[in-house]
Image 1 (cartoon, rainbow, N blue to C red):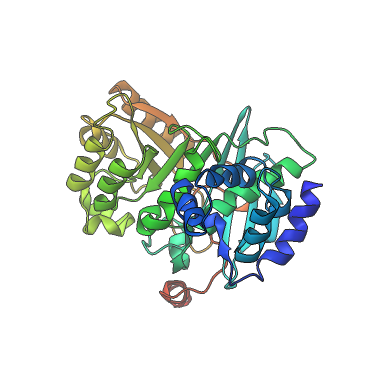
Image 2: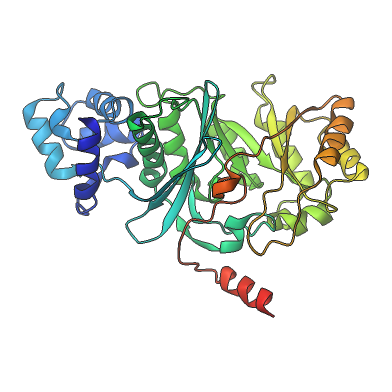
Length: 379
């Protein structure tokens, strides 16, 4: 029954452009919304539970609200969903959705099941402005930030679609990572309330250890995030010296490694047992030498951290290759022998281009970067 309502609402709600989109509101914003409409603030908790815990987006079915409240909500508010443009499942069980937005752009969201763990990788921007050299999203350019509603609706839809699937294996979302399209900290004001809902006991109720924001190193916003949120932090590092990192991650020119490491040291200052995760993509002949490993050890030796080594996932027109497996293992051994908690991330969903660094969506590139890249390649 709920799936039928979901499909019906998907066709209807996107037309309600003049109504307030309640997917934009975390608990505080929802309370303000109800107070502004002469309703008790506890209605916020009730509506959050209906939407995010029970998957109900038809106000008429929110039965602990008065009839008059339900009618009023139907008149002034809506819960529009994203259009499912494509739904694809990998041979390893990874599932990827292409969601079409109201403006015609599209984003990608990925669910990775593994035993009792289910990780949802969501997008925060349409494209990405940072142009990291080994990432297909960055190569495609940038269009705009996602709204809070567009971020959290990815979670709502993934949860609903997984629940409705005939295959119930590992369909429970236990972890959420903002590692999809975009740099989350460049969309801070919309990402923060979305993460609040992920960790709110009246919404998705995930612990602070199970909601992770991944950044390429927007240092000022890292300091803000440490103050404003209890989420976990991952940093896309990929090189241990400024010269190489600036080539791979251009934002390093603005916020070099010294500033980035200072921000990482301070991030969990009030919770010294928590650790920053450093993501390190293994690029053959670029950042995978013994010298690179020793530089990495020296760089992070006083930062409470763990390191994820990520085999590079190829994408069209990329000139990088993945480090051979034996060399990745040897790189890990150097790090672990130095006392660093290091793991090699398993590649998942690469047969449907759902692996790390492969998400591209479909959108108009306002930076003209994808056009420039195509021109360069054609020459």
